[in-house]
Image 1 (spheres, rainbow, N blue to C red):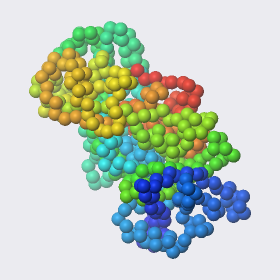
Image 2: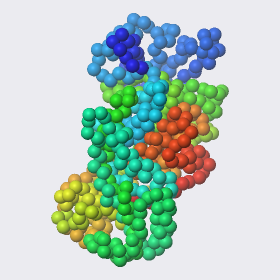
Image 3: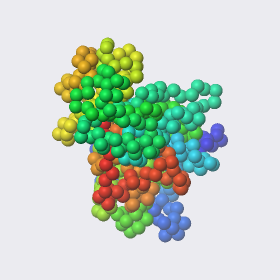
Image 4: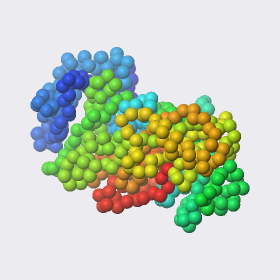
Length: 506
């Protein structure tokens, strides 16, 4: 809703519900039961529309109901006008949980494609500085070299978007966003046993339009003389459209454009939903009728909504559980199989290391490195070799022993110049890791009619976010066509016990 001075008082209708003391936590319980027209009031009665705590006390009551205290209502409305806090709306059309790259991309394409601005869009982000956001803490890589065709196409879509970023995200009388796209490609090395498979994948990638070339060991030596090719038979190199860019700049540009399109961002944490039953049992069919959130001051709000998109990254499973996944029998008994997995990125200096044309190189051990700037700086990392080695997700601490014992020896073996380096800094970030098959989960749920997924990209969220945002907007707007067919990645594949496995996990 567009507010004018005439409407500003009545427009700020958000209910403010004071948080319960930490000494007596009262979890939200119960389900909103709408009257569905059986009360003689056309189905609009909210008289029994409450949520209660464990002791039976009224916890949240919707504003605008029959028993609403008008004096309290106007007092709260005036306080909201005078308050410097974000205006959290009482109702909206689309709620996006998570305002990182995926959530912002969903918001952008939905707002961009709307012909009459028919949907209000609310993005809820609990970490507005993105200090723990997966994409913001990533190595910034983008590649077309995958084993699943749809993954190739999604990254190619993002590359095209970045090439045309001025058209999509540019503003009048302002310079175009600069995401510092370095087109130096990815280099995947392969042992003799893996060459045939790599050759097959390169043909598939080239068929889809990716510019990738397979290099023999001899050609690799000519092009990259700094490589030690011990145990290497071949390598695939992305010639165009691959490399790395600055995720912070892309996120900032998306968010700025979204706000100009009328998308609203609020700093809050989703703590629950209310549900409207479509059948007699919760396990049959229902919809989410409102989202309950808590702001940074501990105050709680409720916003009615028509659709909810889960873009919560590593914490997507928590949001899905609040919506009902993994809590009831039948189809609801299957939780969203996404977990946070911590990964480390190390920055080091090497005065005589590979030059400016160095690609992001992925060793046969899974260890990777790339250049960072032009001053002899590089970043690197690797994934754990087994589940037992997975680091704790309780903090953002960096494991420097992992670098000294695993990462550095592999780097020094593959690039002899890296025998002499100086570690400068390091940080940790999270993958939204799909433990089912390490691939995207997108689309709806068979029971929750208005709850959509955009989760589980397992470290590929940065390069897939733009395409996922475009596909989600088509689902939201009920468009028939989309750039890439992502139906293989629906939640239903988990219910059918089917997997879509990706071989190129870094």
